[in-house]
Length: 130
Picture 1: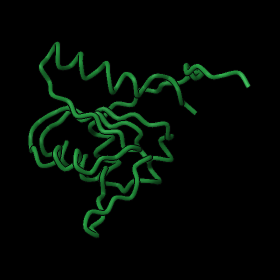
Picture 2: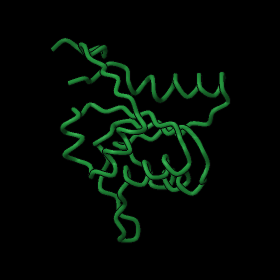
Picture 3: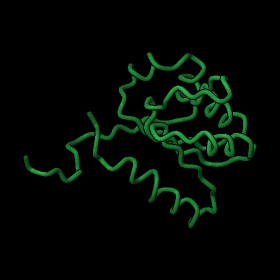
Picture 4: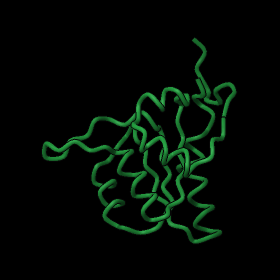
């Protein structure tokens, strides 16, 4: 696994600050594992070009709002395509795991809008000796 390499730290704290400071780009960080429906709705309802930073791809919960299910990644990728957003995604899943989890429309949008950058190595997290 590619856990503990600093992907989330980079995506959440470093990259948005650089993009805003240098280019005045507004970015939205979305951690799918800690999904927040209200934040998601704000992004989708804003209808503006932005940078979508999606962390923990494949870890999103099944979300229902008043009984209606949400295809989170499908909606985010459709939004990104419609408003010409830059999309940055991090995941610990392999390409084949991602292909099994999402439908063709999501996979095609990810493939056409993103470049794959492989992060590998040993975890950089400090662990207590047991």
